Length: 308
Ligand SMILES: [Zn+2]
Picture 1 (spheres, rainbow, N blue to C red):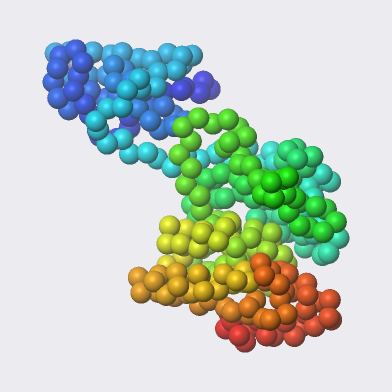
Picture 2: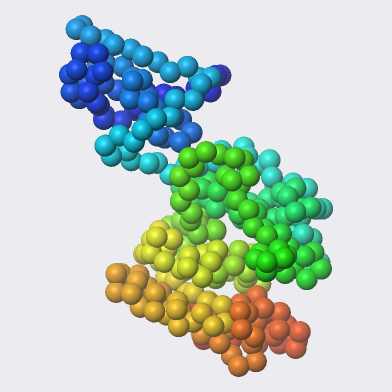
């Protein structure tokens, strides 16, 4: 089947016809990929008897607006096809994060987690992990491509000290992509999920799913991702959040405001322990406690303190 670049606007919105001049009769073309209108000259007049002006854009050329029109164009959230995601669920031998997890956990359990969270592999950075952001309706917002050290499981940073990160929509060179990020793991939300545990890092959400598979783990992807815009699909759920060490005050403040709006968020302070280093997160704490052969204690501690 031919994939057309443009389609007639399926909404009921109509414009002034450039031929007969009648208002609210002209259905314009929309770019299938960006959901933006094509140039205002392209469309079909619905006065079929008296005008029927029809100007169709060809699929080979680009007809993006040459100027901004003074009208509200409601941008739809852009998404990526499932086939693209599916093509990345392979080549785990070059996926540093998966290799790291294989060393630490049982292979079949890691494989289950890969499947559950749709962990992909990118060729970029000589092999990297892709964290797909799939929303609660199964739509794919984008994928975050991150590079890790296979031995330590830590992120690899550039010379400027910033982690090596890219985005699938960016790597695919998509133009006018209306990115709206969502929580990593949001696709796991359903009516049976009563409590959701939130951490900042995607890797930590995966590790915690392995350590405590009885809970649904999601991640905000960044410190600032702990906000209404990301959390709103969870408004009716019990949320327990685990900020990284040093971020407790910030997340507590946010949670307090959100709880006034009707959320039910608890913020755990268990990472704030003195012996934990700044920037540590729940997975680091687990590893630390584990090294002291105290992982069971850690779990008990988590369960009681966090009231999960
Ligand atoms: Zn007309």
